[in-house]
Length: 260
Image (cartoon, rainbow, N blue to C red; front, side, top):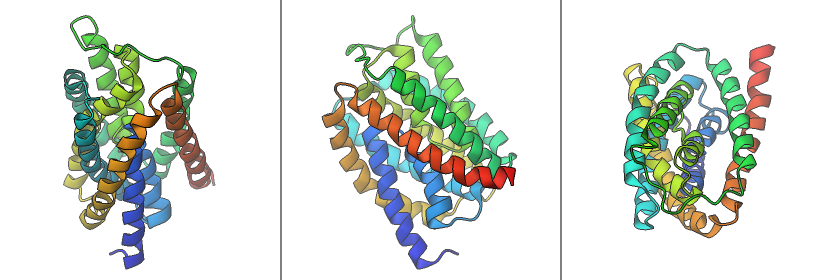
C-alpha cells in the first residue's frame, strides 16, 4: 500500500501525462513509467508498466475526445493502425512480462533516443492536409501499426511517440492530424497491454485511478496547446525534446542497475 503523499504525487504525475498526450499524442507512458518508478516510488518496474498502461489508455481516450471535437482525427487511419497494433501489443506485452524490469527500462530509453532523432530530422515536413488511408497505402499503415504495437506491448507503453511518426511516415498526414489520430491506437494499445498485465496481478488499480483523474485536466490543456504549436515544425521539436530529456534521465537511472 502506498503512502498518501505518493498518491498526491501520482495525481500530479497524471496531469503531466495527460498534458503530454493532449499536446503531442505521445509521451504519456515515456513520462508515466519513469514518474511512477522514480517520483511516486513504485518499487516494481512491471507494476509501474502495467499501471501506467491502464492510466495512459484512459487519458488517451479523454484526449481523443478533445481532438475529435477539434476535427483533427482521421478515424479510418486510426482504426486500421489500431487493429494491426493490438495484435502486436498482445504479443509484445507477453514477452515484456518475462523480461528483466531494469533492462526493459534501459532498452526503452535507447529506443526513445532513436525515435526523437528521426522526428527532428523530418521536423520541417508539413505533410499533406488531405491525406487518407486507402488501398494504396494500407499495407504500409498496417505494417507500421503491427510493428509499433509490438514495441508498445513489449515496453508497456501507449506507444504514441512511435505511432505519431509511424502515421506520418505511412500516410504523409500533417503532424496535428497524426497526433489526434494516434490517440485511437494509444487507447487500444494501452488497454491491451494493461489487461495482459492485470491478468498477472501487475496493476495498482487505486494508483491508476489517481493518474487518470489528474490526466483529464492535463489532457484538455494539452489539446489547446497542440493547436497553437502545430505549424512550422514547433510541435515536432517539442515532441522530440520531451523524448530526449526523459530518455537521458532513464538511461542514467537504469544503467546503474543494469551494469553495476
